[in-house]
Image (cartoon, rainbow, N blue to C red):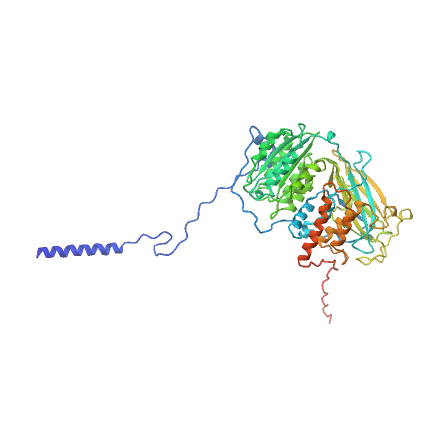
Length: 581
């Protein structure tokens, strides 16, 4: 009996133990709460903040301390994603210059422009079978890409002589073109001043493709191979942060210079503002008032860390310009090419902007035209044309939309304008129509002002202002434009005039300007260019003809684009007056 009771008690205890275990709360699975519901994992800890590089912008002394001692390594962080198939190129949105009535606006004023970035960038599009975006086409840069056989100045104190021709327009019946050309003198190699160059190279992740950093390094090797022991060169790079990889070094120390190039590779974000500050600080530290002091920036313009506001960079560079250190820009690559920013920086830095799409273009800019790129012979060059209402009813300036100035800016020596380098040629073309000709606007009824008899036969009056390097007061050149400058036909005009007109037509067709007759097309451009190729030592003019053919093919394959012709302004519909009754 006792044995049976014991067995019963043991069974009861076991049952109680099993019930107690079942009543215990089970351990939840990962990612579930007590009820089995799925919950989100806790957020990861925040990433550490990026390093701040602001010392050089706040204080030049801090920048100099950074450069003291051994060369500082530049920062590299994780590579950025590449643009891929998304086109992030940025261009300034600009409309073509409007037609002006002489009775209302007889004076046209603008700054010269010797940049060539637009030509090479347009070429890149056409050689890939595409038409360029209209805003990528700056007609003055297409025209000024080429050399012209304009008359040279007689003395160095006058850095250029104006050349003028008036010819019939090939794209607008009954209109004429006024062709204005300036040719700067060449600096003889043995007389050139020494160079104090700072090469500022973007090594961020966006520069990793072959047409960016590798091409930039090849381009700069080409430049530094021409330097001598009188020159000094430094190299500053920037990615997530900025640093110097080459302290000021004699230009003929090829081993040390090439070793600095060899260690460059792309990776990281783009602290462009900090890089500019470091480059200027190093240029100031090695400043030589008897040398050419210049920073040359190689980038795709993708500034995304630090001082990225265009206005802040513009003000910073303009202030440095006043110290005698100029800035030139070399643009590289596609997909995220910031043309708008690079134009702004170059214009405010008293330098040139070029686009390097091939090694041949690098050779042209940094070797064949090294003097034009680096040696300035005239500063703040402005052109002003006053048209005679007795001879001209309407006019328009072809190109220079981003270089227009107010009339009063011409005589104001504090207003900045473009520079001309050694051997540079500058060309401008106006389209004009005589009174009684086919005009875009109706003539004014009450504003006709007869010209004085002594000047009644002049077409226009040309004024040019410039400053010699180091001078603060401008010099004035003047000359009338008369019937003596008129060619009987375009076919009998000079070779340089015919070539400039062909390139101007090419640019207007690319941009879809609304002022061309319907019958004018690529065949007219090609025919005129073929007649004016002349001496073409490096084949640039022959290449232009091929680009015009490529544009013709690309346009034929593209959807038709209807130019937006000028429309009269819309006026609001008047509301009926309330009745007085």
